[in-house]
Image (cartoon, rainbow, N blue to C red; front, side, top):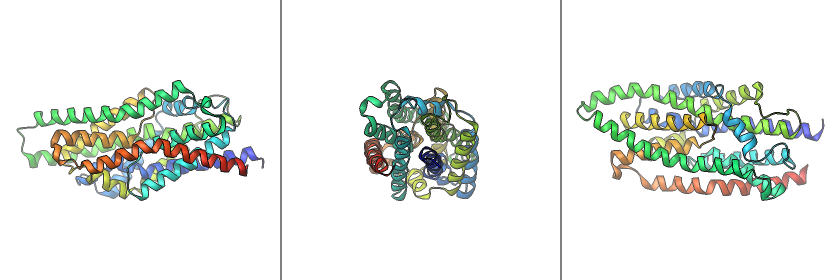
Length: 332
C-alpha cells in the first residue's frame, strides 16, 4: 500500500472522527434551550437532533464546496495530503480540549484556522486563497453579531405581541412549539456543520488525484452525515449545561425566540454557501434574547469566557496545525 493511499485513508478516518466529535461537541447548539425548559427530555432531544442533523447534512453541498476551494486551492496545494491531515488532527485536539472544559467553542473556527495554519507551514502565506478566506472570515465574524441583533429584535416583538397573555398558558404553548423550533435548528445545523468534513475529504481526494472536480461524491456526503448523526446521538452534556443554563435562565418563549433566530442565520448562510459557527450563532442568539428580556439576567461572565475562546480559537488551532504538519513531515 503506497504512502498517498495510506494518508488518504487516514484523512477520511480523521475527517469522519471530526464530524463525529462535532456532533457531540455541538449537540448543545440545537437542543440546549429545549432541554433547559423541559420541552424535551434529554434522551428524546438528542435522538431528534441526531435524525435532523443527518437529514440536514444530506440536503445541501454548497458549504462543502466552499471549504474545498476557498481557503486554499486543492489543485495546487503543496503537500496537500499532509496539510489536510495536520489540520484535522489539530482541530480534533482543540474540539476535545474545549469539550472537556465545557466551553462552547467553534468547530468551524478550529478547522478553518487549522487548514490555514498547516497550509502556511507548508508553503507560506501565499498558499491561502485570500478572496475566499476573507469571505469566510467575514461570515464567521458577522454572523454572531447579526444573530445577537436579530435575537434582540425577535424577542422584543414577542414581548409586544404576547404582552397580554397569561404567562403560565403562554409558556405551556411555547414549550410545545419549542419542539419544532429545536428540530428546525438541528436541521439547519446539519446543513452547515456536516459539510465542513465533506469539503475536507473532497479536498484530499483532489490533492491526491482521486477526483478532478469540486463536486462532493455521494459516499462522502452520506458518510459525513452518518458520522455527525452518530456523534450527536452521544450528546455533549457539559456544553448543553453551559449553553442551556449558564448564559441566562431560559423560559420557553426565550428558547423559541433564540431557536428561530439561530435557524434563520444558519440556514441563510447555508443558502449562500458560507460556513458559519453554529456555536457562535446560537449562543449569540441566546445573548440577544437575554439582553432584550432583562439585561441583568444575562450571565455576562460566561459570555465573556465564551468570547475569549472564540477569539483565540483561530490562532491557536492554526499554530497547533503548523506544529502537527512539521511532525507529520518528518514521519512521512
